[in-house]
Image 1 (cartoon, rainbow, N blue to C red):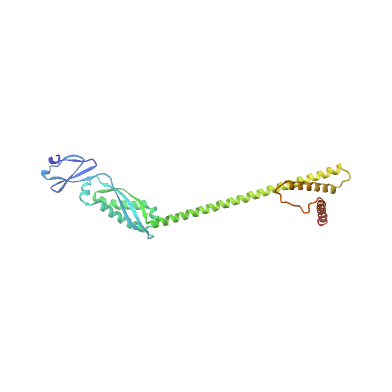
Image 2 (cartoon, rainbow, N blue to C red; image 1 turned 90 degrees about the vertical axis):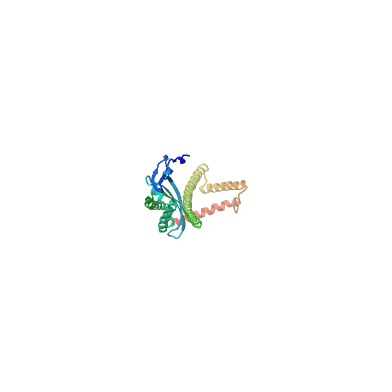
Length: 286
């Protein structure tokens, strides 16, 4: 009913283009306006002042001959005061922006390797934004932001890149594992060396204590029993140790040690052999 009387409403964040007999007259701001159609006035169209976004997918080739799909997201809007240029100078804004994005991406990406494309997405987006700003400002548009939101190589290339990454990480893990095993073996060897050293000290002290004990026993026995010699005492000690050893062997159910010959008279032979060895060593040392 309002349009019948020439009244039109323009919504918020929108402007209307008013014409008079087909010629541009003025831009109408949001609100209610009188457009008497009977005098040749009409609303030719409306222009949104909101920020708009479009995603452009561009297929191109990198410097190392890998085909990729580069997805650019362009945010743009009509410049204030240039609504008439945006309305009259371009018939299809999205196609125009897409053409400039294609041109910049296909001129930039072929100069970069695949890895560099991923690393320099910001530089590519900046180049696209600068070119769009110069081209679209003539038509009353401004570029708010341009982003390279995705770089999609072929599936086989993705798989190869993942395998290379996995192999590299496996190499590092193997090196770290080998280094850990090396340190573990070194520490184990150091521990064994320290253990053997302390064990040697213990054995040496044990033998020294045995020698000292035998010495004291021989002296005490010689003093207590007149007429006995050191040889008689050593024979008695050997016989005593012999019977103690045989007792321990017999008491153990898992013992596999056997002395041949094992009669008590053999102790005298062992004692004679030890004494003969000592007597033969004394002239050699002299």
